[in-house]
Image 1: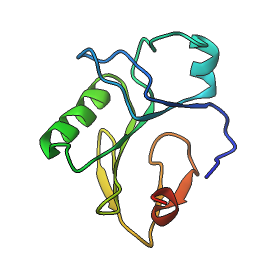
Image 2 (image 1 turned 90 degrees about the horizontal axis):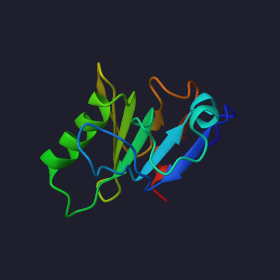
Image 3 (image 1 turned 180 degrees about the vertical axis):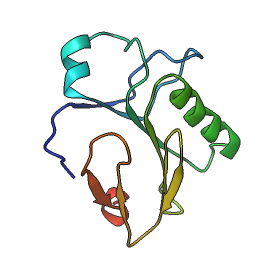
Image 4 (image 1 turned 90 degrees about the vertical axis):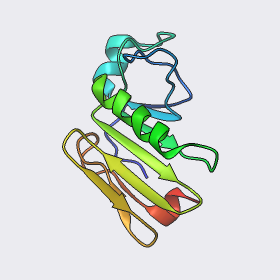
Length: 123
């Protein structure tokens, strides 16, 4: 599951979006942005790649609105991970792709070449 491109992965870390209080469950920061921002308490922009782990108590429309908020705030790619139904939806500014079991999910705009089996991701 490593791309070998460097950068840093964060969990439950705040970033600035157009609406305060949004924290991605998992976020990736490129090596360039790690060098630029270091260890700031709140990233002053959205992460380039975020993942939201969707639970059975999350409301569908709210999850997609949160994804839209990240994208509107400079995020390039959002992964919505549905562990119970075993789906991963990858959303960019121009497309949304859905991956399910026995498939390989890959980044679309961030971390070229990074991919992982859905089954491995949802272990």
